Length: 400
Image (cartoon, rainbow, N blue to C red; front, side):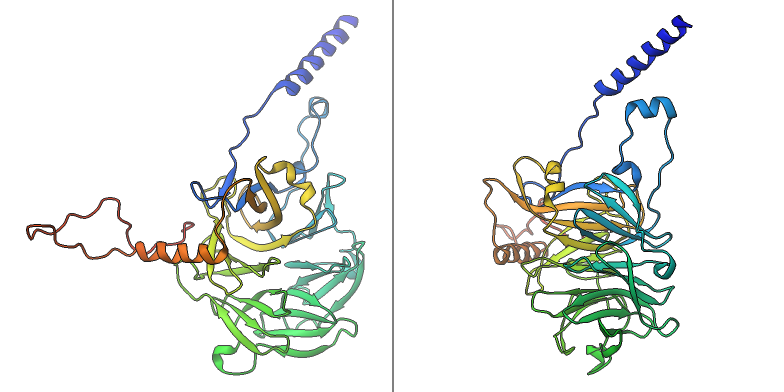
């Protein structure tokens, strides 16, 4: 028995030692735009399930074997608050990646009165109040700072809420069934007005899917039926649109989630291009990131984007030493190996960066150069040969 015990101990020690010394080759950092352009966005990491946050020790694996773990199935909405990433899984419930405790679980209030049938989107106020849209339940369900049920908005069967954002006393809800945004009094739970069903036909909504509020309090609506992002002012009056149907940069095919940073740049997901396009505060395209190259940093049927300034400390370790993070960008993919993707917006130490205005000029100039000009006659009257380095037709999004 002593021999057997000694042999088992030796095997265990060898196993643990082997696990401790085995090293995996780190993946190369992924930046957007790619070199030689100065980088603005770095892909940092991703979360798809329990294994990505709760690490099994070598001892646990040796004794119990590989333990089956919970995973996301088809995520859509995402938000982060106080070190917790909240993910709406449309086929399950709301899952939470707790970055402090390194645990993965479900939102405790999503049962009883807070039971969710198809959680689609989630937004979180500064005080921790959460609003979850559930088109199958037919309500917006509110939870408090501690993830406990608060109340529900709307009458089931009369609408289909798909996204909600709060500002002061109001809760704006995208109603895809009626093609409008319904505005609720947060305290009373009553509809006080609607947006997107007035004015000229070109000023009205069709199939609103996602919402965002800019720093001026204007409401931005991602409309998959219009293939545009539509903007309304505080009073619900039409302001203008961003993009149009097409496959060129700055256009949309399947617009989804939208978000804004503190500089009022607009981040817009397109599920067809598998990318996120970034527009300046004048809504001119600056750059895009993502793509379907099927590696780290890529996206596959992306759905939602969320901007966060408050939880950088949890992700600084993933950034390259010379890349200084300014804020985080979360983007969900509905399929693939990496379902909740985390990017960092920042700058490389010592690098010279153009302003947004200069970047826009460079992009416009590059686009003009990409249009092939007629060849000029060569000396002697013979047509000039085509320059093999010349650009071809106008560029399509890199993700197509």
